[in-house]
Image 1 (cartoon, rainbow over the protein chains, first blue to last red):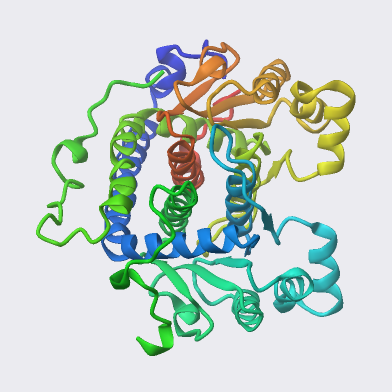
Image 2: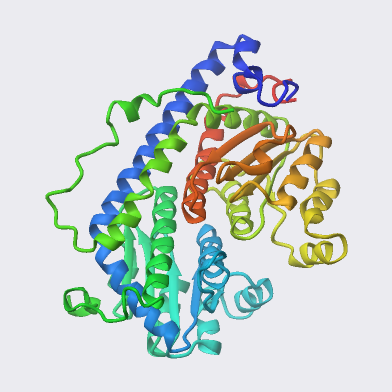
Length: 236
Length: 225
């Protein structure tokens, strides 16, 4: 870019290149940006209306686990792997006056991930780690957009067998994660766009963290009101 | 740099669907946390023209064989990796893979530079040896004051790279830096909300860059040079 940063020319280069095709595309892309912003706004509203009560109940259960020296173990594939890292670092190093809590991402260690993938297969990369260091007070958080990743399904089953709290994030209609008996809380962003799903999941993760901090600070208490008590999925 | 342009469909009420007030708010505590997200999102939509301009220039660089190089510290270090995987391995079938790397995945190099040369050098050093004048630098920061990201953007500009900053808060020192070619500010005092907006912003950058790449006629050889 030769135009000075911040100049009108740098913002609207088509005005200076005289290409009306580019100008039309720029306008189309501007409109797309607004339309997609509208999509995430309405998806967040749908998630709020469907999930707010469950998020509060889950956060209180997580707070009880942290109070019992539990840790949060987050995992996912691809973009959800980096979202798992984000969730772990939010709990572990939140900054400000928030209380740091023990949290790990199981998707960050290339040595562990490649060793397990190469020697056994990608389906076990998270389940094996949970078997190695997951305890009954811990919290397993699996992030997926499809809800169908085999390595997440296996990990959540393994976590449940070990007495861990199991929390899942999915999109679409929840996929196979919605059929797992081992799932304590499943937060679904009802969309078919992987991007909008991840954006709504980011919000749910952040809200879960904030509600968990509130619960641990004692203002909300750790009692679960009866109407918000968790009902296992298989008995719903 | 934000063009004061009225987002037409927001004004037209496309996304102001009736609030489900009739519906019982079973947990006002959690509901209010969701509601706090709405105004910052409206503010971000006002930058739609800046998003489009950035996408156009990024597409022009890709068209000429440039690589996207992404960096950030703390939470945004994971976002940098997220952006790289979006481009390299697109989630939408049929979209072409584009060259993108993050400067946050090599913890040996990052901690090595930080220990010897200081945090401010962690990206600028890597850019100097991995970047070329054809490339695109995307720096992501929560409050706009990261010395590592600022220094990375300055180095990228010196090298002749296209420089894009995605920053939150009030934009901080990065927003004021003349080395930044395209500035996208996700305004919020809450760093979690900043991050949510940034996830939307980089998803849009990925998706909408393809709109231009699929019309290579608009990507003149000199564009973005």
